[in-house]
Length: 157
Ligand code: CMX
Image (spheres, helix red, strand yellow):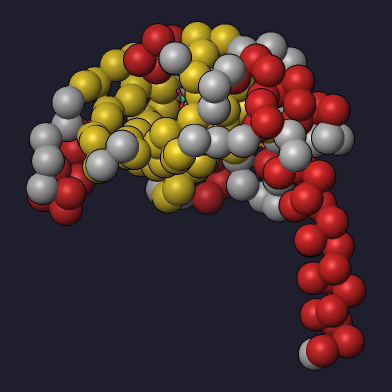
């Protein structure tokens, strides 16, 4: 156990230090947590009850082939994602894994600069440059294959 843990820990520290020095990728907070759901109609009332706050916006993002619903919890949002196309990113996710946490979105100063830094740090990008997402935010995704299996999004206003 100790033999396995020590080398792993040492490597983790080295990687964290490189990334912490990278200002553009440094998040200010978690902007939102994306959750894939089968039907907004069913999930919205559940989350309204769970969070004790109303859904404040429902928006279709055609380019991403999703319909989104937002809730505010402190300065972090919960984004429910319903697929509008079984071949879209959320449609494929739901087919393979079912409902659940789909992605984690970090607020950064500039999503485009954060993507450039991520690439310079050897992380695989889905988006080379930022684009417009829900709520008019500038967004860009890192590939889950290079982020320990978690789909990561950078967001900026
Ligand atoms: N989290 C973690 N892993 C994921 C994932 C997710 N959300 N979505 C897909 N994967 C994994 C799959 O499990 C699969 O892994 P294995 O090869 O080990 O089976 C691998 O990625 C490939 O998955 P796929 O189903 O074949 O799908 P694609 O390669 O066609 O696409 C991805 C995967 C991540 C590139 C695509 O979903 C994407 O571009 N996502 C970014 C855009 C997005 O998710 N938009 C919806 C939200 C928009 C919004 O918030 O407004």
